[in-house]
Length: 171
Image (cartoon, rainbow, N blue to C red; front, side, top):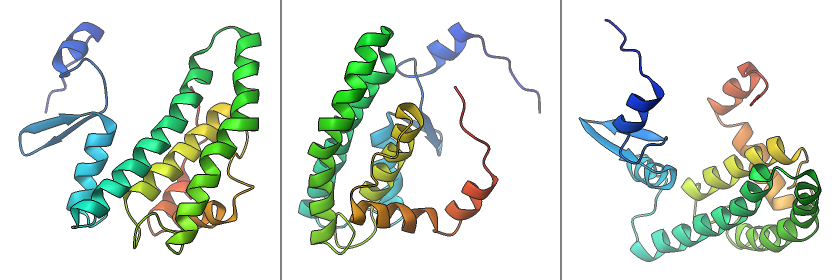
């Protein structure tokens, strides 16, 4: 099989909105990470069948992404003084604001956002991992239910093996 070399311009024009991620299945494509995650969740029993329970998880995921937006502002900031101020705000205010709420929801449901493991927990753990990488601190360590969730997730079959083999993240 011959590989076609993509230029930045051809890659950009080949993508529906000019950016990744892009999921392909059965000749169809889907972009946007949350749409892809929700679709995969629906195919792997990580999304409840009840529409109200789905909406509750959607709300949790959107709140996780509201937190992530604050981290993204830190990542994108170029001015070192402003970047330090954003990091301070994230660590002293933003993490506590969101993580106390996530902790409360997880406690209410025996360590899950819903009745069992769902796509929302995967999103939270992924955002925590990414935040650790960019901020350089373990932001979840003060929240025991979240710590427990992260530890359970890291011990899942496949995940545990992946973590053991992965190389350190770099930019």
